[in-house]
Image 1 (cartoon, helix red, strand yellow):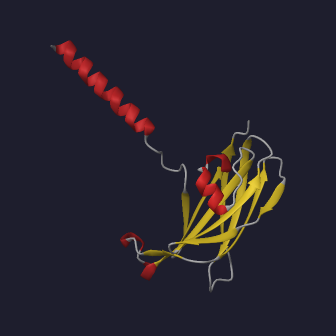
Image 2: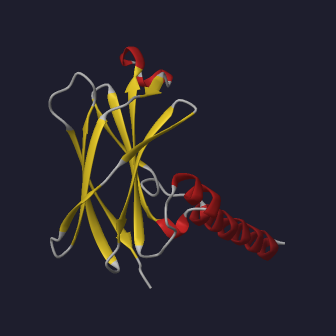
Length: 158
């Protein structure tokens, strides 16, 4: 009976490990950075990851050779971040992307709004596999200095 118990515990541990490995890890996918009462959400993907109807709706070419940057800005209502009282806001958003060789290019962003949610979308060419470095400048209404977000995203281009 002892061996059966040990095998059962081992199988349970393996099953738990597999479940944990399948869960999304913190820091992958959508990311955010806080600036006082504002939260800037950002992510970048290959446009080939978009579902065809979504790509068509927003006029985005699906391709492994194109990337998509998505930015959203939230304002915390009454300075209360912990109560979840936030709302999406418009802002002036500018972005650029560079590869590891230092070649920079601006990303033309367009504002989209659906059900009160405001997003800024921009696609850009992927010249090859590797890390791409993004610099995003967000200036909410009433601010003179932009909030600056920098992040890297790895792409694999076949």
